[in-house]
Image (cartoon, rainbow, N blue to C red):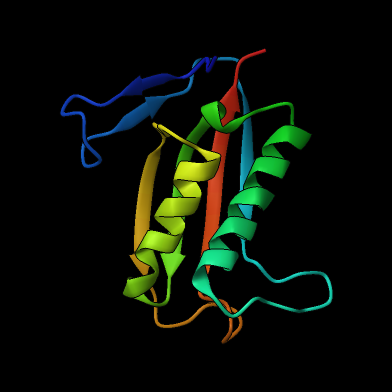
Length: 126
């Protein structure tokens, strides 16, 4: 169970906020892409989104946290038609996610084959 206070007065995305209690550990996860250590990136958005969310979950686990501790995510997409790929991956790895979030469409990311990037912030009181 999360130690953060989630507020969603309209039960929607636009007015969601999260309060982190005093004394919590805060984890900042750099923007994750689907590029592997050898520089390979899958071509399709669905595979990229799945890999990206998997990396975020692994970072959370490495810090003794889970998706319930996410307080903020930022998604960067180069193609608006890829929105459902990241939504589907989010539903798989973080069903019922309550974190605050931002979605931004950008012209390009660090490499031409990278279609999306996800950065996250999590917090947990021990």
